[in-house]
Amino acid sequence: MTVTESIPYIEPWLRGTHSDVPAAQRAVLHALELALDDLKKWTADLSDAEVHAHPLGLNSAAFLLRHIARSTDRILTYAEGNQLSAAQFTAYKNEQSGEESKGELLAEVESTLAAAAGRIRALAGADLETVRGVGRKNLPTSVGGAMLHVADHAMRHVGQVITTAKVIKALRG
Image 1 (cartoon, rainbow, N blue to C red):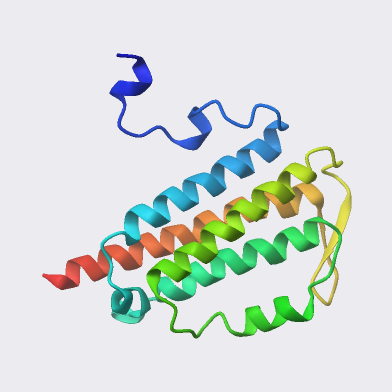
Image 2 (image 1 turned 90 degrees about the horizontal axis):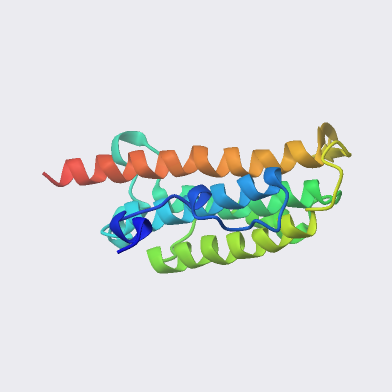
């Protein structure tokens, strides 16, 4: 038995993956992989109704899953030097509502994060200090700032999904 076979779970940053990508982008890729791992783990035994619940006034896991996927897309659009499309604005406006199943929500997250990995790889050769503008006000950031915010933002909301899931499980009794 190897060392890795005796460890039940190895976090993405310790798997030795993405060595072909510069360290900053690699860290973002690893954070997105960890986000997906955690989302699958903590929502695994939630029903569709529970995913849409707002226990104790918390955001629903459904909203948070939509938000993780769609905000990742938006932030990377800015990192690439683009402004949001009409479809992205519509998706943003519709994040608060929807009747998707848990499977559909996780599929959206998984698909978006897979696409994000390709977009991050495409930015691997970019100068991280290149100035980018965010939003209609064109607030200043950089390629590196936007990419790192993708990781930070996703993980912040993964934490909220975990909290919501824990509260739901505790309220089950």
